[in-house]
Length: 390
Image (cartoon, rainbow, N blue to C red; front, side):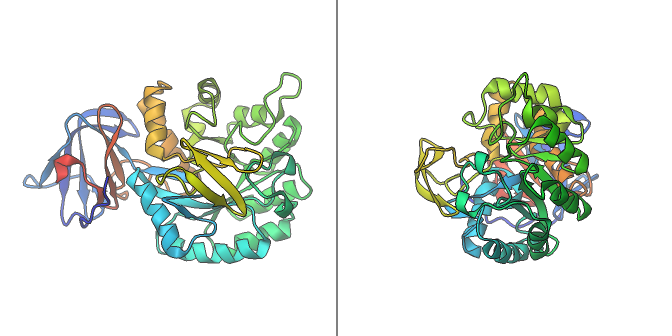
């Protein structure tokens, strides 16, 4: 799969014959009109046509939790390396990506936020997600315990300010000292407060949601298991209609029954598929670093060299989509919400991306009958051209 060098569509182009997934449902033998980088409502009779019969056309994927790919880290890579990671995920259908950091020294994270905010201003990334350092040492996962801190609202504010308006989300353990006040601070500043890497009780999680938390960071992972006497955070996050739950659908992080439980209980409007990808996504097995920690990737599964904890994933969203359709048996409309519409809404970007509607960016993915990706368009430019467009 090669990154196309084709330019934006100079005039109206009609993508015709595919099964098109719209917010209102699936349209067989549908049409999507692309004009100067946006989706249009009409095209002249002589507009060129790309015949996509036998394919699906779905909105471009939106990944709100992604640490890197293509051998590059969003936390520590150079600007060119970050862009390489972004390009890698675009080749796999993610036309909108939020760059996630991992736990580090506060000054380093603040400086990094300034660097990433420049890429957000250029439109290369859709903002910044801080995962750590305000998380529980009991549920640290692949985060350095020596660098963890309590979520002091002043320090949370420092990171938000350093991002210059591009902080989209902060994952924290709300049960820690300062946690609830930090949730309120984030909500007041229009930043998503996400509950994750937490040892919270059910009651503490309810308090955090009432304070303004709206996302569960990779539900089920890095939090207490669901219990019948101590239901913990999972029950609170699943039951509250104000919360969207992130799911990593790679077959490693979640048993299919856990995925089905989340979809059945939260419903398709409250699930967001994420990758939680690290450097090895789209790159291959080997030894990498996630922040200061060494990670070995073997047969596509990333684990810490010391301790063996799962360390992010090597997932791309086209793989998550295909697995949801072919293994989990989810309806295509529900999958599209999980990979496009729901995260776009959460990020405040649904006016531009997340669905195939006139006026929005021409971000779309072409899949064959087996849900294998064959084409990606971003803002009217083929990143990967399907055979019919060549």
